[in-house]
Image (cartoon, rainbow, N blue to C red; front, top):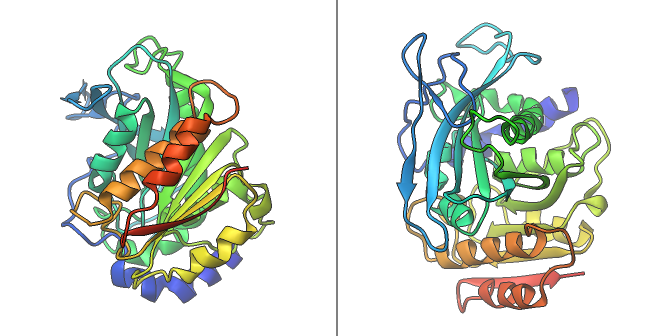
Length: 335
C-alpha cells in the first residue's frame, strides 16, 4: 500500500488534468442499499428491477443496475467522509437478451470516470455475445466529491473487480437473477481505461491481487502503478493495449514500453489521432470504429464461448480491423 500511495502521489497532478472529464457528474444512487445483480436500489426498503432493451445486432441487449456491497472490506476515510465499514459498488450490467451462457467482462473506469460514459462500446461487446459489468468505484467515480483526491484508493480497486466477478458468478446460480444460467463462469475477461487500466493490470498480473480466473485483458490508455508485490507482465493472459499518440495525460510511451514485456498473444493498437478518453467513451471520435471493431474481435478471438485456440478467421479480421489509414497502426504477436 505504501508504494502504491507514493507512486500515485507523483502522478496525481497529470491524472487530474484530464482523466474522465468529458461530461458532467451524474447521480449514482450509491446510498448504501443493497440489491442483487439485475436490480437497482430504490426508495428505502424497496427494490426496483430496471431493464432497457437496445436493439443491436446480432443480439439485442438489456441493461440493469445492481448495488453490490462488499461487507468484508472497508472504504477508507477521505476529506469528505469517515471510513465506511464496507465497499458499495453500483454496477451497470449489459448482457445479451438470449439464453446464453455468455463470457463475462468486467470494465474498470478511470479517475472521475463513470460506466455511463462507455455504453456504446460496452453495448457493442454485449451485442457480440458478452455480459459486461461496469462497477462505479466508491471513491474515484465522477459522482464523488473531490474524487481527484482519492487516487490512492486504486489500491483497493483490484479487490473490487474480483468481488464483482464473485457476485456475477454467483448470479449464474441465482434463480431470482436475470443472469441465472447466463454466465460462463470459466470464461472471464477484464478491461480498463486510464486509472482503471492500473486496476486491470493489477488483477491480471500482480501478486498483490492477481485473479487467476481471468482469461483475456484489454488496457485502454492505461496507467501502470508499482504495487508492493511482484509484477508478472510476462505471465499475463492474452492482452490488447490501445493508446492514443496524442494523449496529453498518459503518454503513449507507457504502452510503447510495456508491449515488448508482454508474452504472446499480445496486440498493440496505436491510435494516431486519439487523446486520452474520447476514443473509448460515448463522445464521437475518429478512432471509434477502430476501437470498437478491434476490441470486439479480440474478445471473440481470446474469450470465445468455448475454450480452445483462436479462430484463424477472427485473427485475420482483427489484424485488418485494427489498422485504419491515418487512424491506427498495429503491432501484434498472436502466438
